[in-house]
Amino acid sequence: LHMLERSLKTTANLPAFDDYQFQYVGIIYKSEKAIYINALAKVVKTKKFGSKVTKWCDGGTAFWGAVYKVKSNTIIDVRYNGPI
Image (cartoon, rainbow, N blue to C red):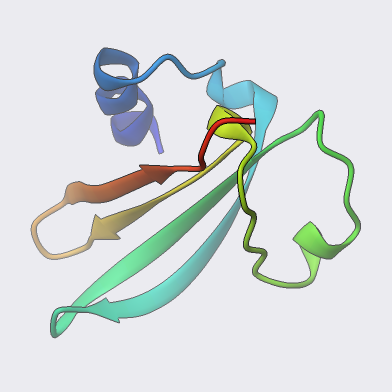
């Protein structure tokens, strides 16, 4: 997560990672083991986030996701939601 935070600080105007809650899901991405990282700002109150992988529309940088490729130790496919 620290590598992702350093990477995103240079490319996006995100709040501090301490202001987010995260979900992690193991996936296969283009035939390679990966981890999908789902981020939700802590100011957003929802009971679903702890028990189900959630998907949001709009909301700006309060919601974003990324893929971590295990073998190459790289972060790819970072996506933010559309504007509020």
